[in-house]
Amino acid sequence: STSLEQNSVGERSEFFWCDSSLYLLFELEIHKIGERIGVLFCLCLLCLSLSWLHLVKWYSASLLWLLTLRTELLVHRALRAVSWLHGAHSCIKWATLRLTWYRR
Image (cartoon, rainbow, N blue to C red):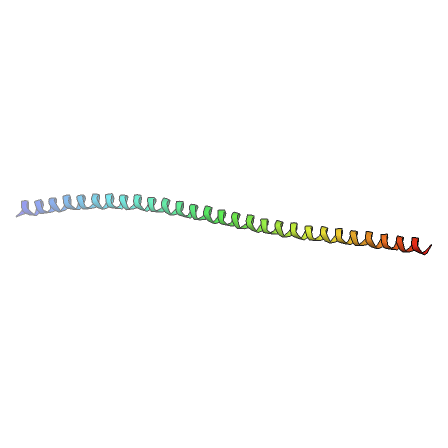
């Protein structure tokens, strides 16, 4: 019975060693999978941040383009108004010169 107990204890210790090595191997594999998931998560975050930056860049460029277009439109209108005022001033000046010439 002593040899049986030793044998069973020996088997148990061997089984325990096998179990612990499998556990360590399993833990190492889980750690590797966790690292891979972490790397993939970081890559996804990087891609999302780059796409977000691209979206912000596109939005700001579009907004800048619209502001530039709006500014150009306002400048064009202002120049047209100045031109119209200059033309009106020239017409008024010409008319007053004609009136003074006719009065003489």
